[in-house]
Length: 388
View (cartoon, rainbow, N blue to C red):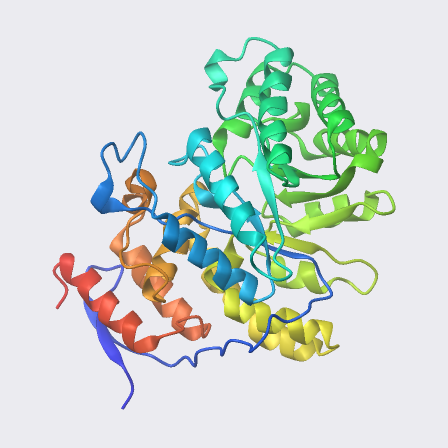
């Protein structure tokens, strides 16, 4: 007998939904990919220990690290302490330091585990930044911490820099200084303002072409220190423009949670690697798809990954910065944490109809790993909203 439950509809009614998906099995050993694939991982809150849930929410470190083991076991690298971890949106720099320390320590105990760590300027409030030098010092402090703990750096976009910079030259000065001092190659991070409105006008322009010229200038002037750049603009044409103009040896990492399937597969000449928040939510599917692509089976890659795209577009729909709620919702439905709550109470940023849509799309994409558990938890969840 198929599983079913009542779910709300957008018109205020409720109706029965019958599950149709088939869970994706886990591999016995971590697979090998022919694309570099970073999963940006979330943190698990500890609501029973929250003292100041909006200011310094408690973190369940055991569950948080266990989730990283889950991702490593599926063949992913981890992009640590990034926006998926609610960086600057529930996880402050003190919490990020603890997360980075713990993850780097755990990685040393897991064969072939790899991660890179987000370093930004979020301990410097944008309103407190007075000069470019303030931004440089903030970046230096965070990168020094990552390197001191044996980590590699993803240089996150800076709200403070967006506030104080007056021209593309200011961006070139900051990035040039930081990259010249970096111990290892760095991944740059182009995060669109749909993810963070405070980053509007990054790279010195609100227009794409001048911004692209600025970031390419920075990369070309520092290409020996740049591993690649993650671009998260939710616009595949813009990513392809960047990808086609990158210098030899500098990688493009897609952060496009709307169009990642086609960007990872590529156009026959070039392709994107991946640094994606959606991989947190669809990890078994993405792992199997990437392993198929590495084996030369593009048809299977498409058949597995393409059904996850409508789900991802729902999770990342506007206001996009609240996508973390959908990611954690699926982690709860799939049994990776015992509760559905986020640091800073961010689960309240989406409504019950949004979560019902995620449930339906996750089932159709074969992303509900434990259907019985998912149905039981979803029944409890919608019951809170009066749906029996």
